[in-house]
Length: 114
Image (cartoon, rainbow, N blue to C red; front, side, top):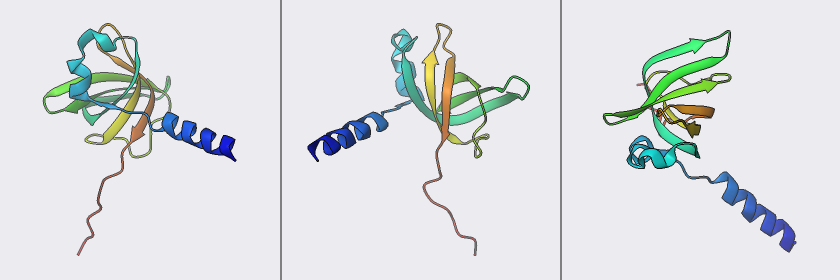
């Protein structure tokens, strides 16, 4: 029984990984280069989707700051302009976030139509 509880706690800690905002990420400067991290922001700018190579290019923004993103994989269903996302991956020396995951965040509320 104790082993089950310990495994459950460890699993919860691993799944509850923290993410940075765009501004928090940029404030760290070059310290984040090459490190695995998750960044929360709003999809902005031009979205380029090369279907043949499954490569998606866009930027995530917060306020007036943005981070360019390159992602190879299938696009999440709710992905699009002005979508809140959490992007996981590593930032290279040129400041581009090479994503290995994109999670769209659900709106915090839905407005009913009258």
